Length: 262
Image 1: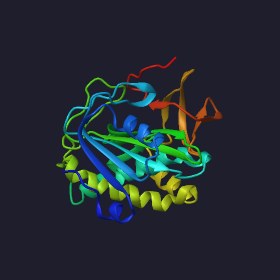
Image 2: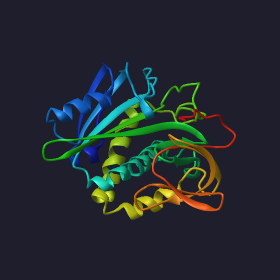
Image 3: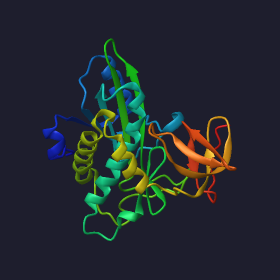
């Protein structure tokens, strides 16, 4: 049985756990529009219509974590994108907590712009933000998927799962750590007021920061050096000696294939 961590429960988060549904995020989006309260988790053992970034199908076999979190008015509109960094750090916190005493070192667990968790250079988790407006408020649904016991083979970036990487855990064991880590990071973030410390922590654990990477946007693909993220969470790169700011896109090491959006 999946349950909340102690801190998450104390901070007013609630959880609904189901066996099968189309998509945890799509369900919470509908619930929000129907007037549901925030701080609501939805976890499914299996999704039959899971979605990844840019509308891609998200393979969702049993054994991995498929979850979404509904937040109502979590911050001003211009701060919402920061949640990708807040939640990515929480994913990292949870993995390190579960691995406490294990062989995995903190340096092996990294965050990849804009929203992936990498372990030993392989993608093990990701998140997706979606939002909407209500009559007098705004809502955000954050979908979080974690490869616990299996991972897809054909992906743009090499993938793995926690068990394969030497972290023996299960959804039931992992989720309380994750819900507590997210409650802690959201409190630290303070609706955007605490993003400076979040940003510094994220940069300290960022994947391939300072290295040349392929940057893939909706209109172009180019090689640039990753130089950091700005105060709003946009990626800063050096492209042929010129600084550029990337608001949306994906990054890939030069030695892996990628799926072009152009």
